[in-house]
Image (tube, rainbow, N blue to C red; front, side, top):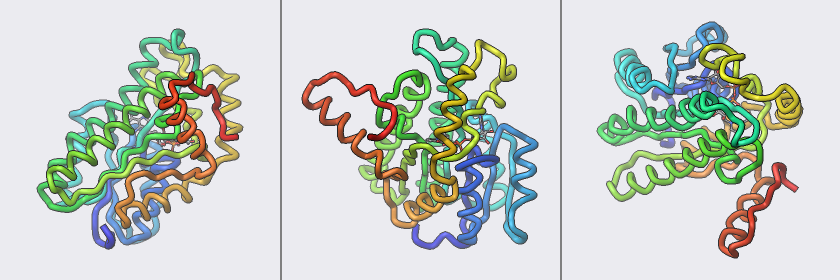
Length: 277
Ligand SMILES: NC(=O)c1ccc[n+]([C@@H]2O[C@H](COP(=O)([O-])OP(=O)(O)OC[C@H]3O[C@@H](n4cnc5c(N)ncnc54)[C@H](O)[C@@H]3O)[C@@H](O)[C@H]2O)c1
């Protein structure tokens, strides 16, 4: 979709980090923006901080609930009459040994990161197909292309987002649809993802702690060395305009992807690395 001006973008997880940066990047292209997030106060602030003149709708939405994502689509349509770009971006993280993560943590992470994207795809794809134009951007992660330890639930959710996106891309091609798809797979980005349990159902302390404090500090340090969300958002805008499927914001991490594929094909044990070397 080369011309974005005047069109409508829906972004989930829009009140912080990468989602908020996408909202600003789309607005800078002259788009009207729909901001969805579970955090009401942060959402209000995000809307208040938009540059003057940007047409925006905000809606508190829990993407893990299909009816709330359907409601978001309906509200966007009612307000703007169309939706052109949909960024299924909301995400949370947890950490720990796969066998020690609580059932509640598994359900929470898969609910937001994977079911949130599934609900977005189910709610919006028919609309975009019917319109004959549109683009879906699903936020996965490098954790959707590799398997770093102590991130089991997160890795499972992000691998799910990658394969759903690839599947959707193929289906739209076979159907002859003009609707585009991208999957965003960043490495470290300087956001608040390490504090994801601020939005945990039942509060940060419910169900056994989403991420041990020690691990949270390590992740916080790594995120601080990462890209700025605005850099990632610019790549997303380019990918939508150029209909590029894979968005790999960290080229220096690519050997981890090719290394994984080579090991699979050679039937070797998986690498245990977490960082690019
Ligand atoms: N930061 C990184 O290093 C990194 C790397 C790879 C992928 N990602 C992915 O990028 C996406 C955005 O995360 P971020 O890094 O900007 O983190 P962030 O915490 O700054 O932003 C995430 C947003 O999602 C919202 N959210 C949480 N649960 C929600 C729910 N149930 N419904 C709706 N919104 C909800 C939060 O309120 C927050 O505003 C996530 O999918 C994350 O997994 C981040």
